[in-house]
Image (cartoon, rainbow, N blue to C red; front, top):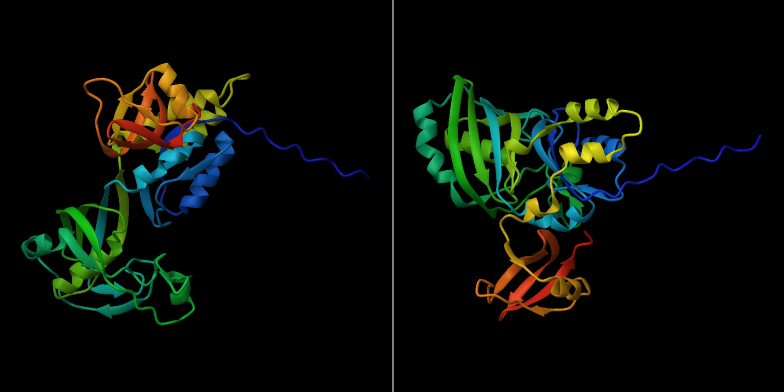
Length: 314
């Protein structure tokens, strides 16, 4: 019997951002896989991994939006997390084994009194079960193999750390606004130690990544439901219109310069152009140009001349 040829599904040209509310219990890659099956995009990726036991904001980039991923990942992040006192685990969350215990339970006043020590630029030792590389190997792979993992402290930025609630004597809920490379699990561990007890994260939700916040969140179930309710003849463009944000939304923090059609053509060919207009900046390490409100390229400005580094095909 002749082998039936498998027909490849057509890939869709999609450009923009989908701000997914990742459910608890699945990995970021599993969530991305579900999005791929629904949208079948030519190109897709996500900005910032969330652990399976964490929920919340997972920015998904389609097509040309993947060129703006670094600007999202380098932006500030906000997490709401619950710390349970009395036990420290080897993973600093509920996934690991308990390695230390304490009968001490800190009061709300005691917690509030030390929070300032954990804001600003501080030194933090990442969890042993993390993606940090040690001699070319992921720390979590070494730790799972039973090897001793010693990670060095490194500077991180914690812009804000607030005590939100103390539901009972065993638990406290915090909200942290932090920079790239911050481990909330390590914050919980270090808070416990500073308060003379032990602590680990028992709930974690991400509320903000760079320019994207709670107002942008899309529930995975809503996308799945909308995809099954498409009328005959309707394509993925209906879902794109409903759920996908423009590429430019990822660059809100960057300098934007509008250019003429002629200059846009030159920039798309990789050519530098002299910016015109009284408002045009003379220098900027990172900026983007646009024409008719459509992004043209990301680049730098030196002495009024824009040099493209990443050109958009929009």
